[in-house]
Image 1 (cartoon, one colour):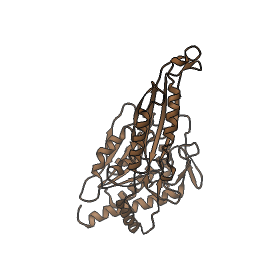
Image 2 (spheres, helix red, strand yellow):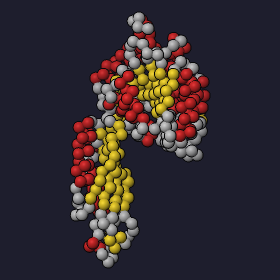
Image 3 (cartoon, one colour):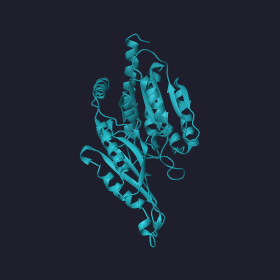
Image 4 (cartoon, helix red, strand yellow):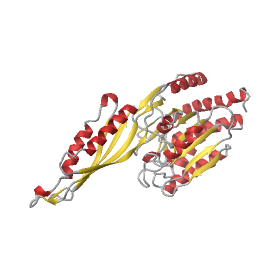
Length: 370
């Protein structure tokens, strides 16, 4: 199976998000492979992160499909590198998240090209900053989304090869509290304690979590103060919100703003900064209709699941593109040095995607739309 050799090639290139050269090297390798299949390349060049790449084919009448992936991983150089395999598993940074998924898409396209000698109406978008929130690439994603009817994202599959129909939305925010410094021994009463203000806000913010409906609000980091003998003049809270519905997003955002603007300690002032990085991906009727169609194409049941984690599928789904995620291989322990992917799941996913893409190509030919 030579595609494991291809996987090895890109896994052995360190592509930590902040390693621009490494990410660009992976993109260049994918470009070489895709151009062999007739794809044209458009690079979105960046100075401080890797270039994003949109690989395009000829446009004809019919369904426009986008394959979606990312080339970056979470591992800095010398932290987790190399590629290994045994009879059942492959190991290394990105084997499931998500260089493995990119290889699934690539191999399905190779199979399609081998049978048809051409590919049309299928594009492949590879971003370089997914692991840090897609803060740059999301603007490109939103712009190109209008060009597609269907988006297939190749993040890792579920344990039973489930595809993902829903993901939580996520936002990251910072609250900065300002008080007044004063000597804690000689002038305690003259100080305004920003740390104390932050502690009240922390409790109010955590209370917004509602696990029953899948809403979590987590203050993951607090910083403040100067030293034990000084009333703290400033403090910051770094928090993340995750939500399953737009109503919950709006509720939490409204409350976080209210908490920020409330001074629990007289004399403090606070400022809220941050953004929603990815909107919620909600299961919808168009997705379910697409799954039914794919089941007929492949003559097999396609299982689905919802996930708390986010991906770039959130972005395209929020732009009203019918989006399915989790079309990569099954893997375990992503974002750890034990990351691995199940070999047998690659064949199954490649077979699934080959049948799906071949169906859409042949359907247009049969309808005389070529």
